[in-house]
Image 1 (tube, one colour):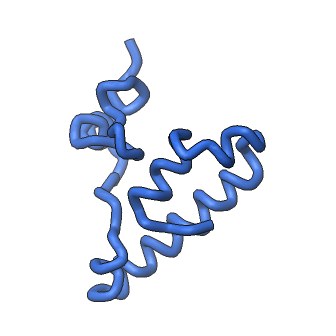
Image 2 (cartoon, helix red, strand yellow):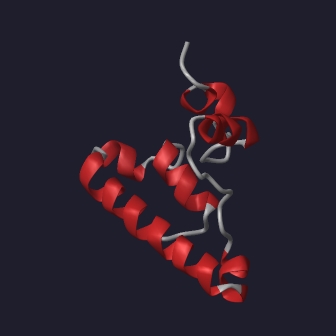
Length: 89
């Protein structure tokens, strides 16, 4: 059986991973954290850098690795994650 972060039970309906999904990644040795909001980024330079790195990485993935249909689908996993982080590509 696959890990929780790869199954529906570890994925948040709003995009990204829920706490169970993040816990399964931590068990594999990954250093996963929850999303950084725009307000948190204003208060912390480290959070702002992490948010910017996420935006750069995910917007590049959206551009290169998704079909035109998926890129414009508001319910696709990548668009839900970008929405949760409140990031525009």
